[in-house]
Length: 295
Image 1 (spheres, one colour):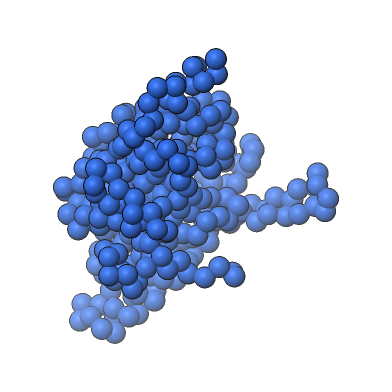
Image 2: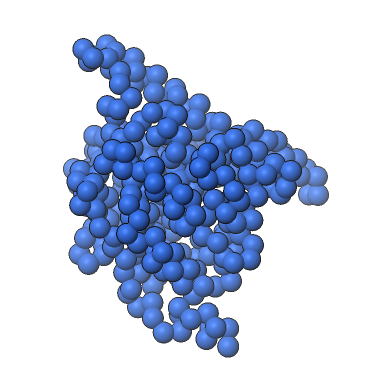
């Protein structure tokens, strides 16, 4: 509650260079201890001193908050627009960084289908949520089965068309399952933004090395490339970067001379012309060969 509203990067309402300064912007904050997808479970940890309790109500909170926002907009439009409120009128960018990006990806289907904001684009930032091949985000996927660890009662809140454990993989299975229902309007897109060298993502999704993470990101990109409604802006900066849309990277990060803010902005003002941008940078040689690194 002590965190103020984000006011930099994509969420700025004053920067003349920000294409979204006067748009409807929904940004999820960093973390609710459940990636904004907990279904109402309280966990008490007794193996530490002192014991503590975590309430995993992320999905319930996101959706309650969005219904509240919807009602405020409804009242405003009812008072100022002769046609009153229509769910297809708001054009919305729905984003978050890191855990907030996970929340944007996991709740995007609800924004479109349940809230009815059909002109919404999702921009998960630094939230690729990829399978490391052993234990990680796919293990996190067991959250759809309340009887197993970590048991966050997520099943009722996952997309009805993607509710198995492997749907926890955002830059992969979840995107593939979601794609057929995108582009009902031109704004129905998922725009993945990430730097390929991101030690926070490496650590939080339990990849054995940065090299393994980069390889997986590139393999996932190749498998998703060309899928309608899914697009990527994957920088190749060799210095680790975690999160870009809410800081100075929004204005300075570029691929082939195209600034991130302009790429995302153009994707929403002219959705049908969106193209992927993925940078090789200096990520060649041993860095992207985990076997060579291990040896």
